[in-house]
Length: 232
Image 1 (cartoon, one colour):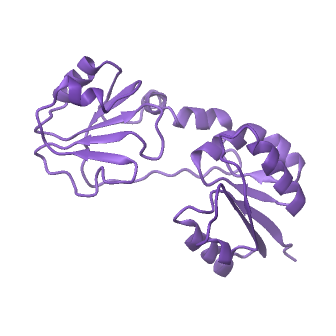
Image 2 (cartoon, rainbow, N blue to C red):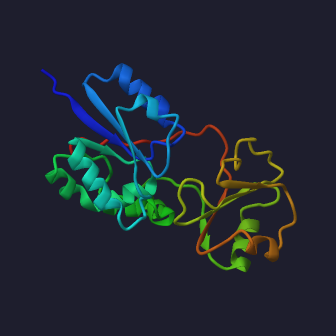
C-alpha cells in the first residue's frame, strides 16, 4: 500500500506552477496532498492546491522559521523550492528539515554556491575536460569594451552578464550583424541592444560588478540536466 504524502511547493505564484500542479494531480503514482506557498496571492495555482499560504520572501530573515512552522503544522514530507533565493536559503538546513520528516529538494549548499558563480562553474567544467564557450571576466568599462571588440562586435553579437546573476537578471545582448534569433535577450529581465558603435558611457549604464563577456552562440543548442541517485 502506498501511503499518502504531502508535498509543499514554494513560489506557487510562478507562471509554470498551475500546469505542474495539474499534471501532478493527474499523473502522480503516489497519493499527494499538494501545498503551495508564495510571497503574495497565487490565484492561478490556488484552485489546484489542497492548501495555500503566504510566506516571506526567501531572503527574509524569518523565512526559515516560517517554513519550519508550515512543515510541522501540515506534516510536509517533501519541500520543493521554486526560486533560487529560496533554494539557497533552504539548502543549509537539509538535516534540520529531515529531522522534521521533510526532505528538501535542493542540491547541497556547496553545489548551489558553485553554480551561482558562472566563472567558477566554467572553470570547474574546464578542469574536468569539458569544453566551454570563450569568455572573459572584467569589471572596468574600458576592459569590458576591449573584450566586446575582441569577440567581434559589431560584426558578431556579444553577451554581457553578471558573474553572480540568476534568472536572466542583468543580462544584456549587444546584437551584431550576424542576425541573432529574435528571442535572444527578450526575456522579462533581459535587455537586447541593436547594433551600434559602443562607447564607455553606454556600457557604464549597463554594468555593475564583475561581468562575464561572451560571444553569442547559435543553434543547435542543448540543455544538460543531471540526475543524481543516490549520490551518483
